[in-house]
Image 1 (cartoon, rainbow, N blue to C red):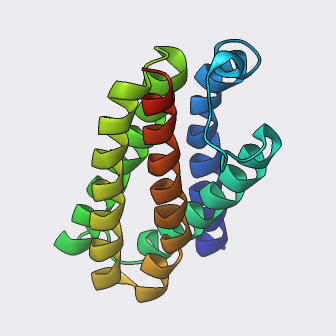
Image 2 (cartoon, helix red, strand yellow):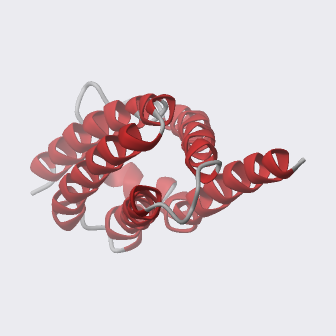
Length: 157
């Protein structure tokens, strides 16, 4: 029962916090974002919500697997700190790109986010390998998002 609660908590928190970015994103999609020039490989807008929902779910499962470990262990605490930092950076990107409408700052921030995700994966690997594997789609998507962000920035200078 304790693990079921941890699972629900971890997934719920990741989905909830992940949706904070939509506060900045949703209003900009039909306004400012429409006016931007986008590269040919820009996906349709409808794809982003299901992809992010799935990625936040995977992050939640990954977090759950780490939370099952002994929280007194230094490596576990370190992993949770890095995970929290990367999540804050994730939310921060939405604020910079959509909230401040600044692809330039958002691009540099997404590079830092990418590094933080990689550090999270490496740290989680020390704790629970499956947990680190669950974050690989997130890293791949953020890699694509960084390329897309760079392209949008360059096309709209």
